[in-house]
Length: 238
Image (cartoon, rainbow, N blue to C red; front, side, top):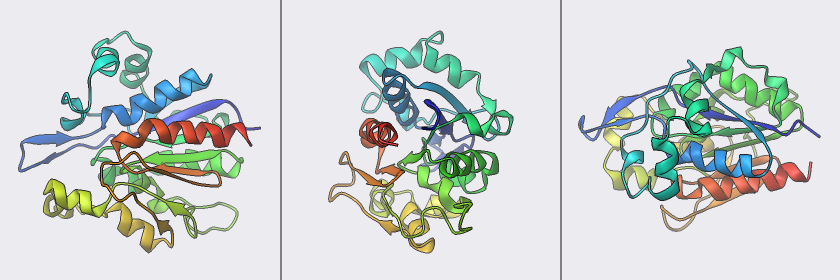
């Protein structure tokens, strides 16, 4: 069985959205909820971004998304989550072979840096090649843009079922034009281009995830806990 150690990938990009009113970056609960689920299940958990830095997403810090225990953990700079997040190393400095589970957290910023995040992608490819679990939530599938199955040389997600943030949700939020201006490819578009089978819930904000073998994906921030728990369930059966 692969090592009971997990890596949560974090976007290191940031960009203004909503006509400059907000800054996108890491959507906090998309890293925090998996961190809580994984550590509760006895995993040793690291966090890493491509550069070792991150910017917290403005929207993800609002009360609708960050409250209660989660807010307390975020505000406590001595919490294990903040210590690991604030002292991340660049992904290239990590030993990919030590991880048995890879989880790509996100935020709209992931659409900017994940497609070319070769060090993070290399870790995910190694986890997959070693028989581990690869998972993502929301905009996390952007990491799959250049992620290969090293045995076949094909895109890792080709022929597989997955989910992620819907194009409908981007339109509902009114930011499609700005995302296009950043050169971003939507999750649904990426899935179709690489031959994956995109699935989604009827509601854009529903808690929804998809399991296809060792690939586990969630649709949106509300799905971050259930996606992590599903990834853990798959891991337990390896």
